[in-house]
Length: 71
Image 1: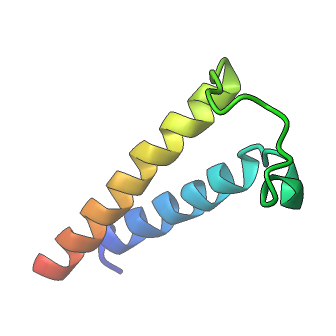
Image 2: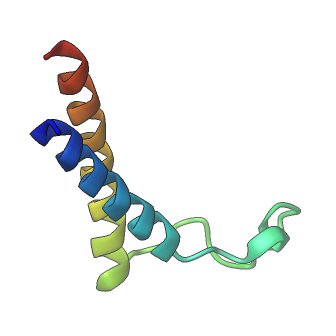
Image 3: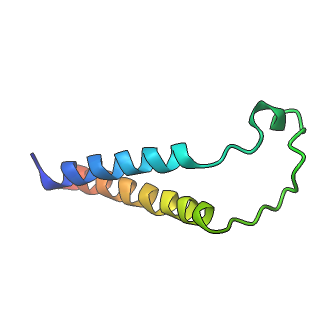
């Protein structure tokens, strides 16, 4: 197997885990405007790590996919 494919599989699994770990605001109650919290939420600690980790892994996944197509 190509090393890029293996890296893409590892990044995709890590991305799935981080997305599943993200906190859900208030479930379906937020759809009707019943969220209750302020619209400006400050992320702290592990929530910040998960948020930025998701962004970084998403960018890495896209970069690996494009690189896999080019090479």
